[in-house]
Structure formats: C-alpha cells, structure tokens
Length: 108
Image (cartoon, rainbow, N blue to C red):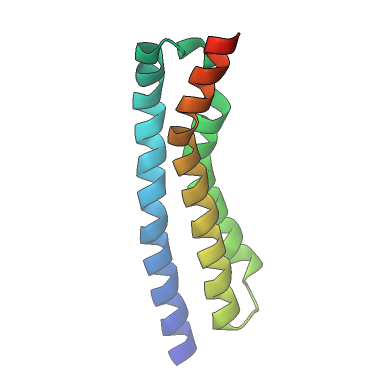
C-alpha cells in the first residue's frame, strides 16, 4: 500500500514537472517563428523541433510510466527523471538554435 502511494505521488509530481516544458514548448511554437522572422531567419524556422517540443513531454511521460511498470519505485523514478531531462533539453535547444541559424543564413 505504501509503495502504491509513493508511486502515485511520484507520478503526480513528475506529471506536474512535465507540464513546465510542455508550456515552454507551446510558447516556443507560438513565439519563436515571429522572433526568427524579426531576426531575418524566418524561413529557417525549425518547425520539426517546435512541434516535437509540444508533442514530446506527454509522450515521454507516458513512455516512462509504461516502461516502468513492474519495476521497483526507484527505477520508475529514474525513468521519470530521465524523461524530464530529455524533454527539458529539447525545449531549451529550440531557443539556443537561433544563433546557429543566424550564422547559417548569413553564410548562405
């Protein structure tokens, strides 16, 4: 019983933590194309990365929960943590890509 409560608490906490990169991904999808257009690199907008930034948080969270089924709670938490780190890295890379695209557009 205690393990189930701990698992539910971990799933809720990590579920809420996965909402942060989801909202960042949505914000990037809305704001980055205009920002790139203002920099003059609008045609190089990485749409695949922006869509992935919105789709990956719920997919990664669900995958971590499904892969963790039948494992001990520490392994489940490790999977949820790895999923959260992956999602955050992707969302942050969308913003960090602007200088690279700017240099690419200037050289092209």
